[in-house]
Amino acid sequence: MTEKLSDATRGPLLDPLFENGWAMVEGRDAITKTYEFGNFVAAFGWMTQAAIWAEKWNHHPEWSNVYNRVTVVLTTHDVEGVSTLDAKLARKMDSLI
Image 1 (cartoon, rainbow, N blue to C red):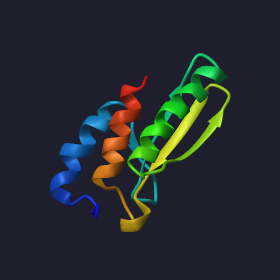
Image 2: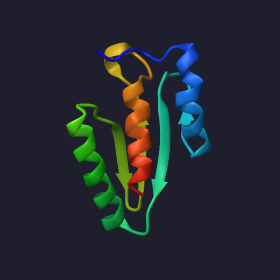
Image 3: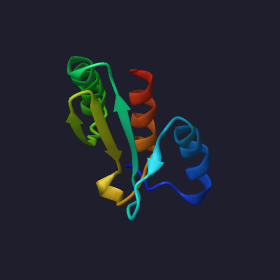
Image 4: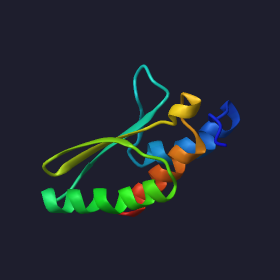
């Protein structure tokens, strides 16, 4: 089972994500990032690739798409906060660009 990130693991796992455009969600223990693509097809194609990994890892993002932008929020509802799964999926999403 996944656990909420401890103070000791939070920095090493999240700091590289923050350097790559991720941020904490105000008022929640969650991380967010908005990706921008050349057009709707590119944005939707990226979402499709990300969805395959999310399903494989049984960890599904909160996200929205408006034309060429996709805004993602990651948190682990079972632990009421950010977990290693969130960091893992965030890294995978970044690698799909």
